[in-house]
Length: 379
Image (cartoon, rainbow, N blue to C red; front, top):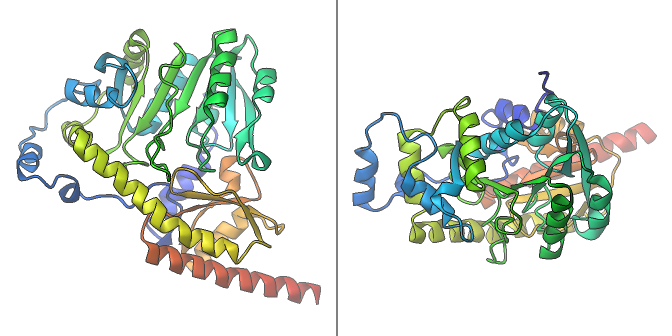
């Protein structure tokens, strides 16, 4: 198996701890263990954890708390994984064979497409449309799905656009999958990070072959726990557990315990409200900055997630822009090429407002310098 470079992950992994101002992240400011576990008795439960081998599919308590986030799910429907990335990996590995077709919503986090290509499948992009406020065309989906379609892969809410699918479109996706017996792989890792406080509906329960992945990174501010999951029909959850045995095997004891505490109902509600508050407070910094640059950028306001997706009206190369900002200004953001969409940039706004303002100020400096260079070349 030959895999293509996962440019986004390598870009962030190499540079995120080396730059002064990282606005490449798509989550919110991460919590410390002390901030998460404020209750002294719960903190003692963490400190008393014995560091043996855990239950490899996740403890009964944790899986039950995850299941409670989905309509009529039970612990038997849940497989715990090392982050949402492993959840997406085991699903793709379990289902995709050579010459299968994968219909893949784009722009998107490119993991599933890269894996499917590596497994020898045919990846068929299903594009979100900026003119539709980053909604897809359901009629186009019907043309892409064939009897060879094994998976329809979506991300809802969307990374990198922050858009949310309408329930009408979700139902159309389910109908298209059912027509050919395809699975739906719904990456719902941004579910819970909505501006309007209305939790995005899940694909779970809409279609018997829906597989929903998520984790505690984007909507919870706990990426360092590396806690993810798949919610699946019982027989598929059991099958995926077998693939999980060949990857990370299981979570750590500390991960399982802390994640379970995070999903205790009252604490869960507090975490989600914290995320939504950060989004509502920080996005106006980006919005106001963009109002001053409407001649340079197009933008559709996100409905969820700490991410702004900017189209460049100027004929700049996004990778070059990102590289120059990193080198000259100490600012890290994500070029659209890493989402297979040249001409766009992704800015993360989930961390401190002050840092965000400084980073955008340096972007202003770069824009002014680039404009002077262009004028000099023309003159």
